[in-house]
Image (cartoon, rainbow, N blue to C red; front, top):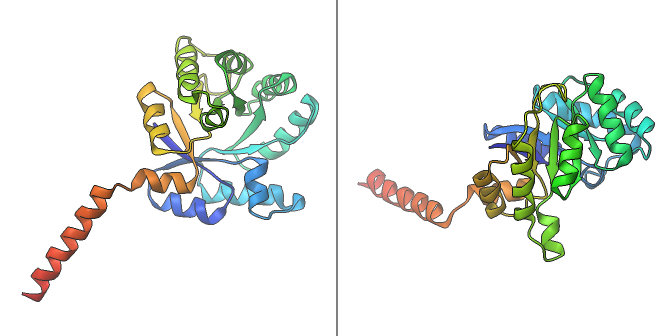
Length: 226
């Protein structure tokens, strides 16, 4: 399973990239707003992320309300850099725009997916990536991991050759909040987990690892002082 970072913060992207295990970036309007960015700077900011990631897929989300608007914005964003993927919400307009963009050779990440039927519709509309959410189910006391498992199984049952730009569909486990979400997504075969930097750091940490490092350092100091 590959790791994307879910942020629009350039410093966070650079830090995660320095670890050597980053495979892409996902952004959304809320994440861009958290950077304090302005509307006029949005496209230049997406370009900075695309350049920082050196060819790794970077999802930039359209905020248009109509299919025509999504297509227009999507084409403009995709023209900024070859690694920009257009992110669209799963809805009537989103599906229509997805098909039109895919037919023009633009990769689409269909987001806000909460069910297997939504995922199947997105795949048939030409989505290159499908982003089912996990954590938001926790907010309404439902099992997001089980819903993700249904999506992974349903999409994996079929050959999507010829449906989109790259003849494949990858599942991005989104709204990932805990290391256990990452583990469960990997166990069921999700292709990608897109994870905030804070959660990535939680995945890296383990108390026994920390204890072992501290022990090695203490013992080495004894060697140095001998």
